[in-house]
Length: 332
Ligand SMILES: [Zn+2]
Image (cartoon, rainbow, N blue to C red):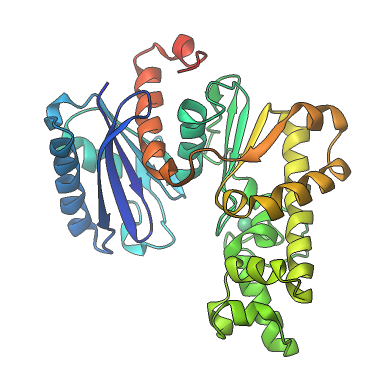
């Protein structure tokens, strides 16, 4: 089946052509402009060029899947308030693509789309109960239960990053305080570390790892300094891992999944994430769900963006064709 996947990011948008097995035939990358009209035009050109590069005509495409940052409305096909693209508020992205390409278009948030990609194309494909966690600059998630993505009434299912772990914790951009993301997301953790270094005038290897510039501190600088035994980095990283275990413990007890996959940071820093996490988890979950759950770095790595769009197209098409209930339960 010929599928197009669109992965919308704050600064870049990727369009790819692939099939139901996750094989990729062509892809195009474009900058995501701030202006919605330019975006509409460039996106449709990229769709046409990607299809051509794969040797297809646009009309041969069976379905298009779009993965985009939330908040969004899947039912209405709208980007609601993309944090990095204020000009796209309420952009009817599904209608735009549908009018330009004239085939069925499906849509979901990037974390749900990544969960679908791991479930259809990843190392644990076909596992009926799987949770995917982005663990990157933020903490997003997607839940597959009994072979179906859990969407929720307002598309908020799987927003684990905004479970409140401590109501007196740091303020989160979402309006709550002490969200899981504020303790483990790369952006908020590095902001807190910058603030602390400035306030307390701490001398730390973290600054050296950021090229001597406090403003440039990222999670990468913290993990590099941790590897060198820097005391502040050790303290910060232990707190991140403790909170990571706390959140995953809640997910284990709430959903009892077979597989929990962790994205970006767990892939890049597996050796300083996985053992420390597994050591802490027994304090946050019963041993039965914990022992039966495979907790691992996500398997698709850099291909996740392309495959996320394809998975949204594939699963959307299967569900709407009414073949979903049977097919969704099968390993691809
Ligand atoms: Zn929040």
